[in-house]
Image: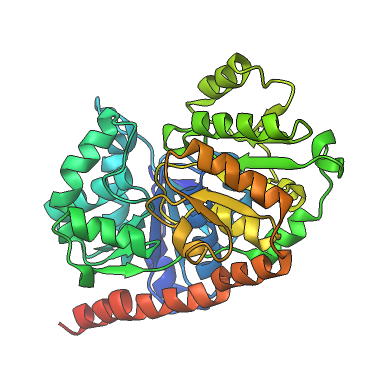
Length: 408
């Protein structure tokens, strides 16, 4: 069921702050706000939803700030999370920056103890506000991908690479989703390692397994006589799906009965479709677009192939492990090596090595790993231990600061 939504241009009376002081809410904890542009399909978006749902379940007062209250994942929000849509200003600003005035208004009115922006562009906006204006809110960015690996080199990527080294060191604390992401920040910016806390993405393993049991309306997946190689995710340059297709071409050359499913959508989808057609693979590669329950595909696939140039902590690999799906991944910065424990739970291949990916897929299909070992590894990322770490983090870096400010 969708979470309740309100627009920040409403004259909320009383405000959330007033409600917390005048009504028994069941929690005396300060308000925590999380900010992400929207809830379209993506790893960071799914992680943000899992975090706010989990903290709300533990009794925290949570606002989720969105530039646009839209996206396929919106229905996965808990009713315990309050969604705040930030209307854009009438200035020429574009993207997240267009919502800066309404974000400032929200912070002054609601006074959350902490603001957790997810993704780099929201983090830049929030840290800019914190630097220029007098707010009592602690800003703690969450870094989802290895810094300095924006291979698309879009104008936004170049802005990020210039601005982050100046703004991030002023953060009260930074959350990194993996050790590799933390290292990339420390090595390429003036951020101190002591100011970065590694908190892995929580993955609701039991929920994934429950949804994975639903039927799949795809002949290749239902036909147990065929091996299926799977990809699920954004069709973006970061994922190197053209390399994925070239690797699969070698696989099907060796075993004509193997099939591939590339699910998802994104700005590179047309390029992927064109590559499949140009290489004469249309009969053996299915491109279903966005699928609302990818876990049922993962549970039936014979291998999941990730060909990324860079990542952060690719949740999709943990999701595959949770249903016992074998994994082949590039050893990209960063995350796959941490998740697969240096290759113990899946094969790691150098970035860009198309031949190596093809060989690893063929080897995995011929000799698959024990699915129970994979499921056991996924349990290390289950919500309870991760949220225990989040609560320790909040106690040390948010609530202790809040208490000290109150005393002074």
